[in-house]
Image 1 (cartoon, rainbow, N blue to C red):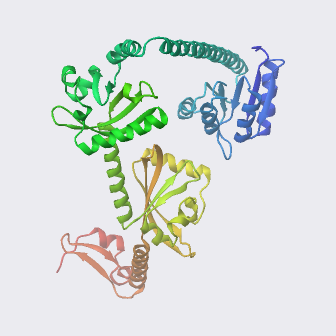
Image 2 (image 1 turned 180 degrees about the vertical axis):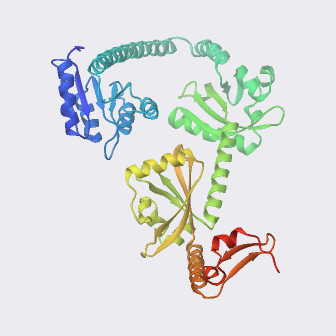
Image 3 (image 1 turned 30 degrees about the vertical axis):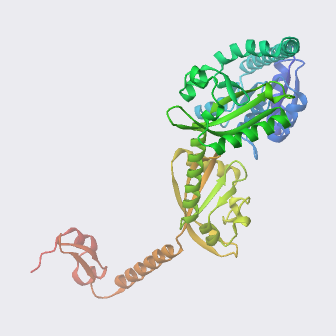
Length: 472
């Protein structure tokens, strides 16, 4: 890879910018190859096809902006090694620079470009890519060597197992494994405990001497569970050489714990020779799963029982509706199947643009809760006023917009009626020949005086409102 003649990929939706950029880099780096793309998707495709040494990327582009292009490049193992330099004249502020670094860019240059700085950055990025490529090749070589050596060791171990006597072999192997393993390990012959490690003793509270020679029944809370595990474990071993089952164990102090029990025969052809097993305490995991299930059930209960319409929206997928409750269906006239998977735009009078949605999402991230009043359209085409409250929640490992909608048609109509009434009252008061006034008895000041006071009393409205009333 020649540093003076690298291959560049320039991504910009402005043809003039691409022409200018080509001229600049070719002037400073003779022999450089420049590939251009007019939008984000085309740029992603060319990055895969051309494997350029450096990508020069504009931020502001329709459809898919530069941040999203960079994020996708860095998320793909095939392109993440390609250095990205952002070039922009519109987004040169500190926040934009920070965001560029967050999505994985290696450099950020503001337009108009300094040719010397641009050339230095390109040369540096080419070196970075070369170093990354060399590191990746070395890692692959080491991985191949490790795999080869691992295969050889496995073959040696398998050969040793075939040559050595079974009892002596297993005793030697289990000795080190039992001491170091972070999980409980043991061996039973004819369901009698022959060996256990310290981890298993610590897990159950028994001393090693208290377990050796005992029936495996000692671990199980009930006879039925002991019988079930035995049948299931031996069935799996007979069919697959290894058996695995979740069950309960009873500790010495009476505590019941959840465990994952995995077993393998010393000789699959003769189970009477013994079975080794490993046991993992999964009590906390089971409790966490139960708590999560309970939390999910509570959320679903509140979700469905809410009198307000609730909609869950994926902001990364067309702002599509992930779920909605019964109130949302009733309010908008759709069934749940008709709403889920559709863009939220089926409810909006005017579809939101990508820029508007990105700005709205940014506002939600800055505030725990956002409220606005707008209008929605039902399935039958009717329009109604709605108060929308939105916030971000984590659901299933992803960021989801939670929208709570409340039909405020009656309130809006009442407010409009009040405004109309006030307007009519003011029109009537200001056109009557008699003076109409409103006096605040607590302060002895007029709160309102009609304009006719000037004609009948000679005072302006401002003079009357400024003076206190003194009854005579």
